[in-house]
Structure formats: structure tokens, C-alpha cells
Image (cartoon, rainbow, N blue to C red; front, side, top):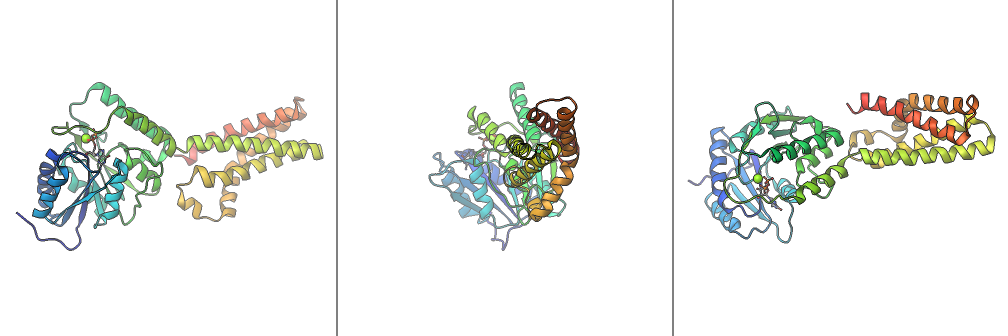
Length: 361
Ligand SMILES: Nc1nc2c(ncn2[C@@H]2O[C@H](COP(=O)(O)OP(=O)(O)O)[C@@H](O)[C@H]2O)c(=O)[nH]1
Ligand SMILES: [Mg+2]
């Protein structure tokens, strides 16, 4: 049964494919049933294929001749799941997009639920989650479950934005493209949802539980190297290593300025303060550029305003740091540079505790 083409589709389903010939038709049938059943007749299914060699392309072309709601994008000479999905999202004709696998591990029946969440305006991202109450996985070994859970925990630990969903590594999700700008910043990885949540830190995210099914046809493209790739992706997205590096460099700036000032004036309290102030300005500049590069709202404030905020949030740490440094030098009689270094350590602990309690929450 062929359908009349719609004007603008109400939803674009983006399906990355690599050698999935036998899954194409069952997926299409499933999606059609599910979407039409929900009153979503005007959809498009955009297959983004990376030059499959098993007849997937021909199969999609056949479908697309019979139903103009089916589109095919073939990427030549390029491979990579995240970039394929990104390409599909860029070419989507609807504002509402759903990304899902071709292999029916992502059940088509869940698609209308995802669409409803983002089309209703209550959220910009709806994640089909294996780990939300009511969700699950079918037929996984204990080993696979542990790996998957570990991946989620690692993301939660290192990328605070990912804590908005119970399944940040899901490959099944819906987006409101009017509000969310999909982007890849790590340049790697299979987990594009993680990158989307990271690059849109102000997006509202909701979960929809689903059961991840076993694969019945074709084979998985993801092997052991995926794990390493994932680790590198998370490390590249995480602000923690960058936060630490900037902090270490800031401490060095602090010590250098302190030494110069102390040599020139011989006044410890003044030199200590100058050291901390220089470290703060250094950190503010670098955190803006390096650590919080995805926080566009923060960066839309003027620099003086951001600097004032940095002062406000670091005031306690600086006060303690200068006090510790001064006490160690003038009362305990420690070496001036060592006093300042220990002061920096004390200030860091105070700031870190406050920050993890109030800012990163
Ligand atoms: N376009 C494109 N699709 C891919 C690529 N790698 C995997 N896929 C598709 O992405 C989806 C998920 O891959 P799959 O092998 O099922 O991963 P698994 O579910 O983690 O085992 C499937 O629809 C694959 O056909 C790729 O490099 N390019
Ligand atoms: Mg799969």
C-alpha cells in the first residue's frame, strides 16, 4: 500500500545502517504499524547507510519507491555511527526526530511515546531507557550487563550532564531539533546521545522505559574496541581532567606571583593575597575557555561578571588559603614558599567541597 507524500513530516525517524538487509523490511513494517496506529501518518524514515555491501541499500531503495516516506542517504567513503546519525539529523525534514537502530532491538512500539514527550514541549530530549523503572534487557549475559552498567556509572561520574537520564548511552531517543543542536565534540565514539546531552547542557531530558530485545537477524558491529573508544570519548567530554589541569597550572601561577611579590616587598600577607588573586584570574580565564566550553549560557555573561562570580564562589577558599599560609609562615615559622603551597592546598579543599556540594549538583 503506497501512501501519498506528506507536506512536512510530523516526525523523522533516523536509522543508521551497516549491513542490515534482513532487518529493513520488518523494521519498516513495525514502524508503520506503530506510527499509523498512533495517528502519525505523516512520518519519514531516513536510513543513513555507510556503504553497506549486503544489499541493504537496494532493499531501502525498493521500499522508498513503494513508499515516498522512506528516504535513503548513503555516505560514501565514510564510516562511523555518530557521524551517520548526525548526518541524518541534519537532513531531517521534521523538527521532531527519533534515532533508533535498524536491528529491532529498539521496539517500534516505543517510538510514539518518545515523540509525545518531545512534541508536547515538556522536554527537549526523550531517552528510551533500559534502566528506568519498567525497562530492561532481554537475554544478556551477566558480563554484558556489567559492562553496560559500568558504562552508565562512568558517564555519571565524569560527565555531570549525563545524570539527567538513567541511560545516557542509549542509542534510542527523540529530540526536538527546534531547541537542541546536535553536535559531536569528542570526534569519536558510538554514543552520540552522550554528546548531545553534553553539548546542550540546558536541555530538559525525560526517560521512557523500554525493553532492549535480542538481535534476531544480522550481526552486531560493535566489538571489544568499542569499550576503549567509549573510555576515550568519556575522558574527552569530561571536565574533570581539564578542571584538574587548570587548577594545577593556577597553583603554579599563584606560587610564581607569590615569590615575585615576596622578594620585592618582604610582606607575606600581601604577597600571599596577590598570589591567590593571580591564580584565581588565571583559573577563571582558563575554565571559561577550556573546562566549561559547553556552557554557552555561562559564557554569554560578560567577563567582568564571570570574574565577579568566580570571586564570590572562591572567596571562602581564598580566605582560608591566605590564613593558613600566613599562620604557617608567621607563627609556625615554615619556609615562605612551603607555607604558600600548603595554603593553596587548604584553599583547594575548601573550594572543592563547596563546589561539589552546591555547583555540580
Ligand atoms: N551508518 C552506520 N551505521 C552503523 C555503523 N555501525 C553500526 N551501525 C548501525 O547502528 C546500529 C547499532 O549497531 P549494532 O551493531 O546493532 O550495535 P549493538 O546493538 O551495540 O550491538 C545498527 O542499526 C547498525 O546497523 C556505522 O559505522 N555506520
Ligand atoms: Mg544492535
